[in-house]
Length: 200
Ligand SMILES: [Zn+2]
Image (cartoon, rainbow, N blue to C red; front, side, top):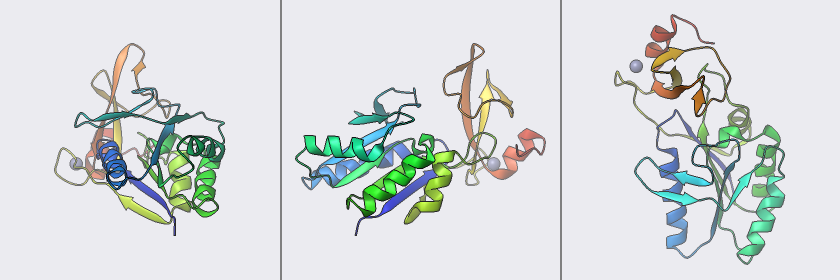
């Protein structure tokens, strides 16, 4: 029976690497997979890239108002209708309605869906797509990464120009006021120390 899987973690927990490995495992057995990601993620445009250096182009990008089920049907037709699995990177950026689509793809179309994404934003709030995935997925799996102190990282602190910031828009992938935006995966203890006790 097909299932909806949500594999989530903090940033730098190897989600893209795990996704590309899963795709490889299917293809090694001669099966076809479809790779997709939301269009909002400008980082790498139409590529899924692992920090280990492996990169691969997605089969399609998902626009914010796109019907994911229709996109899958269209691209499945292109490979003879035989889709062993749909793999989605950066799933936190999906609209909740699109996550509903994923469940229908699993249940009504019988295609397993593996969605990979970040659970919470830099203010410790769930991304809309991740919140819906946590509600609907048959299977939840946490991909772990380590904080600077050695504990398991839970949150994603934002740095602008190398300094921690705790206010701003939910999505700021590239440049913000000409200074570089980066993120550090942190445990709750380190996050609260840097934020001065703030959680949002
Ligand atoms: Zn820590």
